[in-house]
Image 1: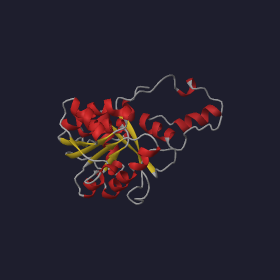
Image 2 (image 1 turned 120 degrees about the vertical axis):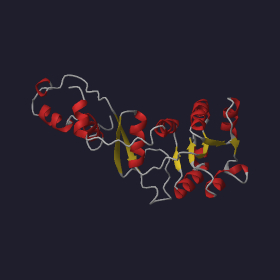
Image 3 (image 1 turned 135 degrees about the vertical axis):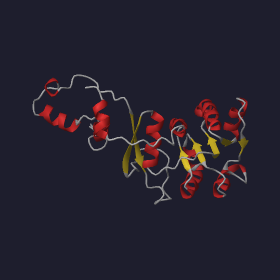
Image 4 (image 1 turned 120 degrees about the horizontal axis):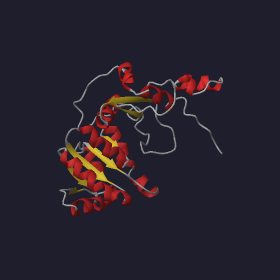
Length: 236
């Protein structure tokens, strides 16, 4: 065993705020000998709303930092978005973390081999939101085979004009780029770096991209709720 991490600095406070249950206080009393039953805790607390935790990254201040996911801790804080639907909660979390979700424009999709089947559903949903799709050759072939309109774009190594040129010319509004393997990750570094510099919304996983599709349906839902009111709705 290398580590036992109770997640007490971030995850526990988030769950406490999302459910209205002060977990740190409960844990302290249990360690002092109290029973969960004595504290009125006998089962799950399932809220009737959604809460999304989003990390805040300093990439706009440090453009040389690579935003791709990895084991290093790069976030400088976290925010929570709460809504009646997952899409609303996710949209609020993105707004609070400083991510601007475009409503339309051109979306670049370039994914690794095992994500290609999922890219079809993603492309269909993106087009449904009014975006035009551009994709690298392998991804474009799969999307086109599914009958979805798609414009092909060169990878950096395939000659100009290529992806980075389009980003520099402000022709791209949204990027979904998943990579696999050391070489592919290195090759896409210039894409990520330019996207960060130009402040183009960029996702490195299909899950985040699909969540964004949910959020696009709820961008205009700006209802504000007091946490105390939400906590009152949670079944004991």
